[in-house]
Image (cartoon, rainbow, N blue to C red; front, side, top):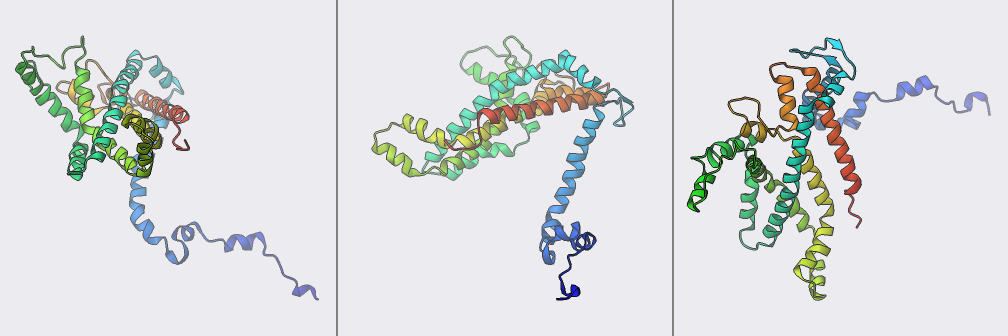
Length: 323
């Protein structure tokens, strides 16, 4: 056998030139992925331009002084972060979030689960009740907040809530002007409940429909009561959905803004009390001072707090449903 007849391995340069380009790999063989990118490409481009670039720029801006402009001026390092952590108003806004989360998370979870169970057991007009409970989800938070403020919980001499109290002979209540007792929490929490219970009800309803009926039939044969079937069958089977719902509720509580701003603020002024983090950061960045550096630092701190809460939550409430 001669030397010329032996197989020759291609050189690295030849292998590199034979490798398809990035564009060819994205398009796939015979442009099979072309239509995928035609439909998905505009959304990916919008996500990059309107989501990821602002997030990256906000993180970059948080290390600079930036007043009345989004262009960095003076590098301050971690100074903005230290100032925000020392700011009593910012820490107070985090405390407001904790109070709001203690109100809204367990209440929404319980009402959503209860509503889902009732709708799942309904044999007549189930689609109607499912639509009725889900319909408020389509309503804007701003519109709902204004309805709650100007119609239901209006001034002392007006509003549907005070009219109802008058029917039973009770005195009217200035819902939004009293801090002791803090009746404004009832207004804010009830508005949020009306808006979001239907959405989480649909999640629980979908999970309930995946539970096999044979489990309940076997429990009934064994003489289990309704509460025992709920405790030992329904709740364990709903564990992954329950963990996801609780995490979503916690994140949404962090992002509370519309109801606080539109219900408590008067004529566009700064809310006098119950200021969650986003409301406070809104006035820091877009208020009279327009301090984008400190506002960006506060936004990054809030994002890290949300991420940490999600990690801790996932540690104690696993999304896997092995049990």
